[in-house]
Amino acid sequence: MRNIWTICKKEMKSYFSSPVGYLLLTMFALIIGFFFWNVVGYFAMMGQRQMQMGGNMNVNEFVVRPLIQNMSVVGLFLIPLITMRLFAEEKRQGTIELLLTSPISDIEMLVGKWLSAVFMYGAMVAFASISFFFLFAYGNPDLKPMLVGFLGLMLQAGALLSLGLFISTTTKNQIIAGSTTFGVSLLLWTFEWVAGYETAAWAKVMSYISVIPHFESFARGVIDTKDVIYFVSLTFLGLFLTARSLESLRWRS
Amino acid sequence: MIRVEGLTKRYAQNLAVDRISFEVEKGRIVGFLGPNGAGKTTTMRMLTCYMPPSAGKASVAGFDCVSQPQEVKKRIGYLPETPPLYPDMTVDEYLLFVGALKGIPAGELARRVSDVEERCAVADVKAKLISKLSKGYRQRVGLAQAIIHNPDVLILDEPTSGLDPRQIMETRDLIKGLAGDHTIILSTHILQEVEAMCEQVIVIAKGQLRAIETLDSLIARGVGAVDVEIEPREGELNFPMVKKVLEQTPGVTTVTQTGEVRNNRVRFAVESSAGHDARGDIARAVVGANLNLNELRSGLEKIYLELTGTTPAAAVPAAAEETEA
Ligand SMILES: Nc1ncnc2c1ncn2[C@@H]1O[C@H](COP(=O)(O)OP(=O)(O)OP(=O)(O)O)[C@@H](O)[C@H]1O
Ligand SMILES: [Mg+2]
Image 1 (cartoon, rainbow over the protein chains, first blue to last red):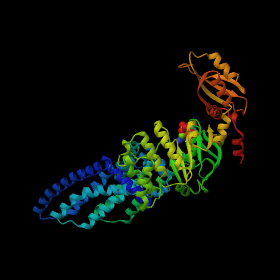
Image 2: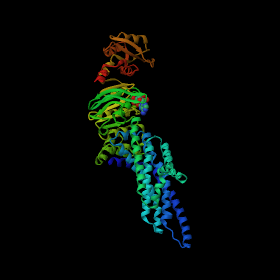
Image 3: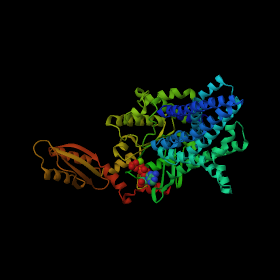
Image 4: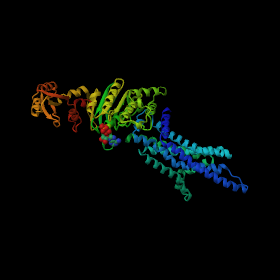
């Protein structure tokens, strides 16, 4: 346990000893802030129109849900920036030789690194979510679906971060690690498009693999066990691949 | 303390380390000597559990490097060829991190770090970013990292490479000071380094063990070949005369000039009949002929070149015994 924490702490410090950590925090918050402003503006306009027609509009459905969905998508683009460094940089600097000859296990090392990435993403989500407080100040959204949405964001990030971690072990070049992770994230996002025109078995499989349909339920504020299982297994797959990759690194290096 | 049996490492087609066997006793400083590409780094990486051997066995303090790597790693301090440093950390941060990684209890950590900073003379830069340090300081931080958990065994890959002469001397003293409590293996391709620090020498070349013996016996084998530098006490150098003086010294078999005559000085490699120590006679003869003897050293270089040459002709008995054992 202590070893995991040692590694995790070191990685978190290193996000903020370079501009990367601050850049990620600001970029994510800016983008989400912009979306927030747009969604609220749209909501206000629609709200007036609805009121004239005597209807009612729900803040959760019209503001929180699209925002959380946007956060999920924007996250896809930023996740490669969080993970690309994790192992590639150790390999480039030769510090991997220190880690692999220290009395800690590969599992402790990779879990520590993965946790630091999850914390980094968590910090980004938390920072970007400050705007949500305005909703409580000026409206009365339900808290529970919002929290479920955040849980979904974290589960999704955990899965993609573990894949990014794995990809980072395969190269000593951060750019290659980052762009490959970006490509994989993008594919996992867009796979579900095939479901729009095709109903054959392969299309079902592809859209099952895709992240988007599994995120839907969380965005709606519903916890679906199937989707939790999907994200958790994807996480374990990523961590497992990372462990195997570290092992083969020893044999090849 | 360290036991290596038939250790072999193959990179695809390339046999980097070929059935090496040796043993190192507790408290010894052993020099791992060999030319570039000999397989020194590869052997050390197998000893430190960085990579598994293709064949053969290595054990440290009785623990096998393949089946009990965690036990081995706890007992080893390792300075790789390029010090494994994080440029965006300060020296303090780095050593605290490595200390925790090596399993030093949290309560002792700060004390161990300042201890080791004193010892490796990096206390004055402890708040500096590693990226701002000079090469010599980086090397010393690397050394501090290797000894922070007070390991039984120290494995140092070219610990003095890239240092200035003063730092080389300081580092050598530091390493010598660590012997006794620690068993040390250090690699180098510089003969003087071994001469200055080690009690025992392991010579490898092309992945093969060429010799394993004490420094004294290596030097004893070197007395048959002596390098001298001679200068006339006054006037111009009379080359044929100087050469004749050397050739007529009792026991001397061949005299070969090495290098140009420069600044009125000349160098010779002098060989004497096997096992005969001609150094005293040479010195007397040279001085007797009214010449200055600027330098006289046993020709370790020659032995080194012989041992590490392409043909393992000089495959010494000691090496043969060791591989059988
Ligand atoms: N990762 C690797 N992949 C393939 N071949 C390698 C690798 N590392 C080393 N080698 C080869 O193994 C042989 C031994 O290399 P090694 O680095 O152990 O030599 P060395 O004795 O440390 O040399 P030097 O004094 O230059 O550091 C060399 O022929 C080298 O080309
Ligand atoms: Mg080397």
